[in-house]
Length: 166
Length: 143
Image 1 (cartoon, each protein chain N blue to C red):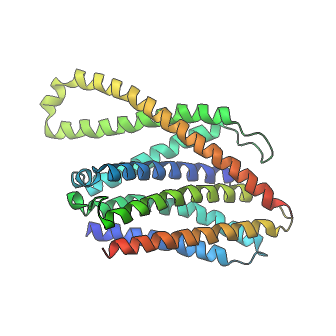
Image 2: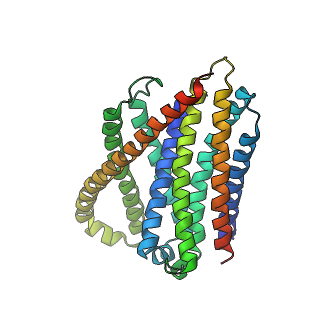
């Protein structure tokens, strides 16, 4: 079975779950988690997590495919890892925001289409600005994950070389 | 009903994580081909289970709503410890998965019990980690 695909799947899943768990922990320690959870719908939360996971899987796969995973004795391409992680992390952030906007627009279409039409230009402008901010945040998160992944890759190689000798 | 299903999925996912790790820990070191084959498949399903554990874990906390005990309570302190333990477990598990992927990707026909020993130790660590998290989880469930 292709070990690169296992790496894609693993990195995407761990990036998603670690990000959500860190956010959850910060919110809980900060005191806002209970009120936030009370305002959310379980099914929407499940759907939102699923979309976040799917988008993270897709963008992680795009980044990993562009970084040639060198042989175990070759130098680790740290520069490429950080660069592609920033790029695709940013794209991931923007896509996640756009997915949220699609849901909001769909909701307004059903509940208040008149207001949606009257505020269309403002919403479009807000979406553009928010997408740019989301891209930047996503890129920063991507770089942070790249640093963690690179550190783990160093450990993987050390442990692998230590155990592979017969 | 939905909360019942959420809690059920959470428990089943944890059972898979624990049971699979325990099984892989118990495979004899001489069975390198078998353990690598099983480990690679376990890791793929582990990723799915991890995602389900996180989303259903949030769902379980959602039942409390605004009444979720704060960090100033004993329960809240235990939850904070559990969240931190889960984060550490995730990092350890990512390391484990990448190692399994590396081992599976360069598997040769040469008999090498070094890989099997490494895998057994990884899953021993996984099992022990899960036991600690389970202790915290059961403690939280019993208030």
